[in-house]
Image (cartoon, rainbow, N blue to C red; front, side, top):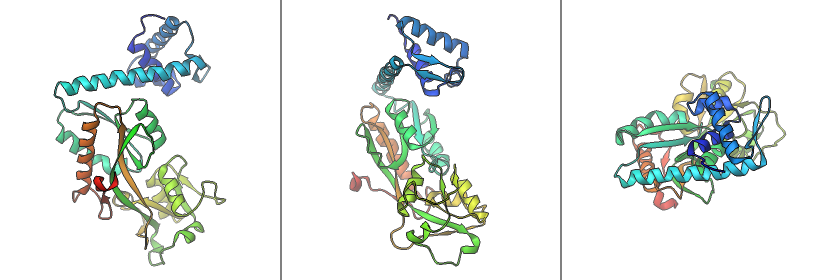
Length: 313
């Protein structure tokens, strides 16, 4: 093995991430032949294959899995060195790679992007929207700087900072507006529309209704809250959505929004980042900025409660 470069490592990790040379090339802003040549050159220098190439699927060899894990750690350290140099030069932060879950992104991002770019001129903000397990994996691998997710994530290598606590509301067809509010037991007997598996919001809704993931009922799953609300408007069933989604998702659907009595189901949204990052102080400042944004009159619906960090940590 000799003369390996960071470019070799980055392209190999891109192929491992996408499982496809074409998709990896597109994500890396390079032509597929050029990327394939770099990966082949890497394997020649190593004297061992990193990838097993099939007709439709590219997968790691046993050696390749170990190699990519170490390559990711090297690339993460290199990125953190760059962050350290930037901070030593007096810059706040140049690039911010921020992940965010789908049940928060459409309702927070429009104001968040404008607020952060105004507060930090020159900020190069990259946003990644996907489900929590993927965000945590990418954050741990150094592919993201921070993520906004539902807490807790209970990952020892990450710092968790709560931003807000919000209630869930019940969305029913408009014809049901005058009916009594069902409790958790009654919800279990109704056709409850849920997000597809993998969304933490689905698990939170099931927990409130005391229903396991394998509960023997026929559900209709959706990939987005907007889909669920439209299905409710069509009379197919009922659903739960987070409070921040109400103004956006219910304005064009024939549905009614009902708040639960007693202790409603809720979630805590927070920001997480690696404990090892040199940007920890900057991540804290950005999380404070987001919390301030959510406390402002236009930042969130009335039933969202900004979390007092001192009382939660």
